[in-house]
Length: 75
Image (cartoon, rainbow, N blue to C red; front, side, top):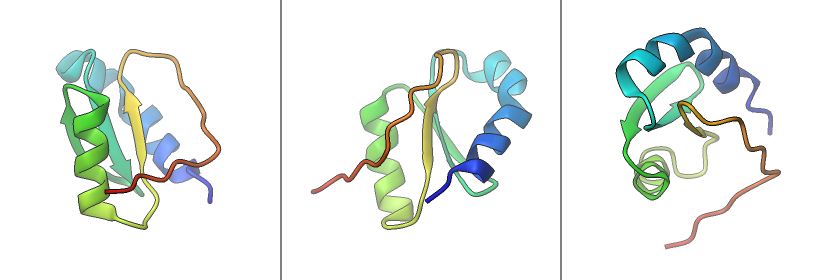
């Protein structure tokens, strides 16, 4: 499960994100920028509800990338 599309979308918009959403968390699925959140937990809950078993990227706007091989969230 590659996140190449999501990472590309992030990189294409990162300067805009920094201007408008500094220190927030963004959720991206495919080319869709789903939303911005104040905490990782808020982003993860919203992404899980919206995308369920689909792939999505959660990334803090101003932080260096952290790559995890796979994350599963359970209710």
